Amino acid sequence: MSDRVVRLHADSETCIGAGMCVTTAPGVFDQDDATGIVVLLTRVPEAAHLDAVRRAVACCPSGALTLTEDPEPETPHHSEGVVP
Image 1 (tube, one colour):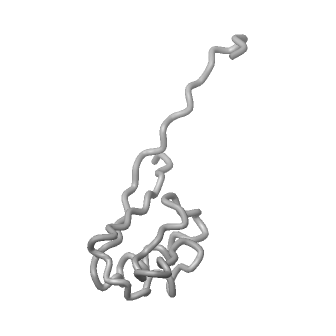
Image 2: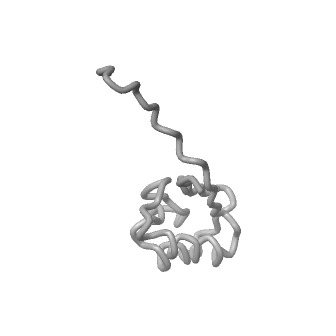
């Protein structure tokens, strides 16, 4: 099984500013001071935050948050003896 990159997406037009994401994963989410709309602190959360991010996505009352998992791009391998 290959490694996967988890990417976080937030739809600012769907967000209602409930703040559940910030409460659940404060190291990944913030809210705009003026509107209360979600602000992503990162689009690729660290592995240590993934459980909290998944909970935040699941409890978002407006459904503004989604996660996608993309295959991590393979690193090209150089032929032995060839210096890049």
